[in-house]
View 1 (cartoon, rainbow, N blue to C red):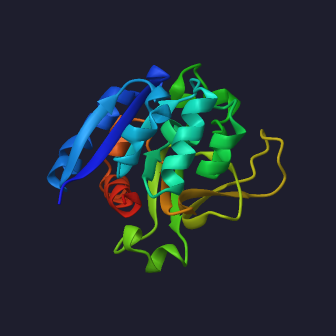
View 2: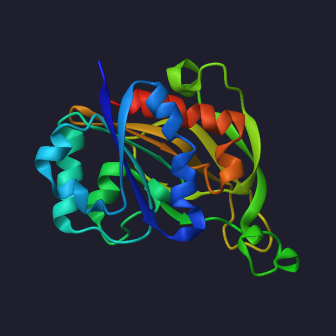
Length: 230
């Protein structure tokens, strides 16, 4: 039986929404999905179309969406449509919508930078070596099966989040003398979320194409999409 996947992409070009989503289209098709791509989140407001979507893969950093679009997405997920994404394409979308934030369960707050003496004024200022630590729940979850703690050099997301998330992996921001916080801060790095009859999957690693092609990150995202789908 063929399922339907809707890929919605756009927003800030720095996350390469076209190239990033293109990495996963062959996997979706080989997994039995009929894939369509839209460049505008207003598609979420089309209730008839959304009723036939089994999985939404969203890569829209920042940007804006209408109240009708957000309501349509929330209604679709509550009715069983899966929602999946990575990094800013899902965890830093539609900042003005509290309804969207509640649906996804986590909002990017910052990505701490290197020592002031090491910054150059480009994206690499925020590329830190950090560990993605699999949680106790994650070790028993299909998405994380066989994956151990692993390291990345990329943006380390500090995420505002709530307790409805099932956290499969975390990352901890250390105390540094050049930052104003005074104890280590642990943020979710991979989480799932049940919403009505639907499922939400988020991976915060995924800033750039090379990170998305990391074996661990790619495997987690591929499995996360399948897990979220109706």
